[in-house]
Image 1 (cartoon, rainbow, N blue to C red):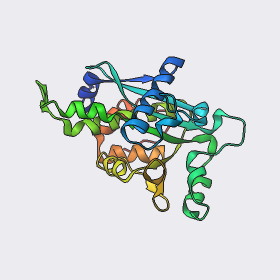
Image 2: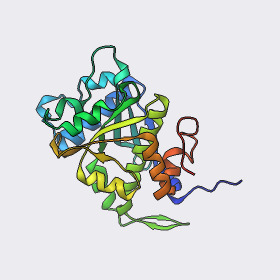
Image 3: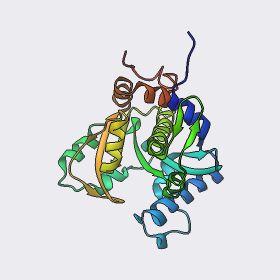
Image 4: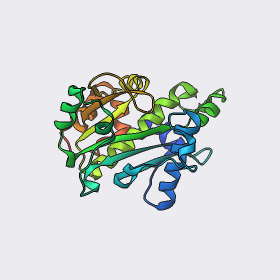
Amino acid sequence: MHYTSTPYEQQFAEQFELVEANTAELISMCKKLRYQIYCEERGHLSADSFVKMEEDHYDEHSIQTLLRDKVSNEYIATVRLILSHKTEKRFHYPLEEHIDEKNHEAIDMINSVPKDQTAEISRFSISKQFRKRYKNLTHVTDKEHGPRNSRNIDALITIGLFKAITKMSVENNVTNWLAFMEPSLLRLLSRLGVSFDTHGPLLDYCGKRYPCKNTVEDVLNGIKKVKPEVWRLITDNGKVTYHQFTLAK
């Protein structure tokens, strides 16, 4: 059966590339980009606390991916997965360290997942500078599918980062995701078919965010049901998840 790529897949392949941060140089690039986004652009973290690179002790237990814009040849987004099995010492996710002890719902949520198969999605970062430059363009023309404008670029980059998260998770036997997520990101994800359960009230952690959780299987099956074209891009039409999870029919 002939496979025809979707407009999402075509645009992503034409414009973006995911790059695994598997060298010291690429890991440094992740940290520099995080400094730009978290310290300079958004002010969530104090620039005085770092020397042009945002880093913390969780980097020792993390795997990271960069997203490169092929047009400008710039890295414009990054994300990391914090893995408990990267250390033999007693381990706490950022979510564990920042929830209030009275937030029993979030505590119960964390205690309900096996740590050796759980990762926290962290530093989900998209450059505001890139988005601003992109929005200054009137449109990017696609001969087959018509003009593209800046309104869908955030969605496409977000899908790309979730593609990276899924690949890293499958490669590391991760079956559960934890995360701190801003309400605006949760709304965008919902429009893309990506569903996370919130546990407890908003917390102040690099801005106001909800503690969130879901299984990888439920997230991917939810996307496939609601937005199959997004699912195809994230999973390479099911190839990434074929041996790992029970996919929805």
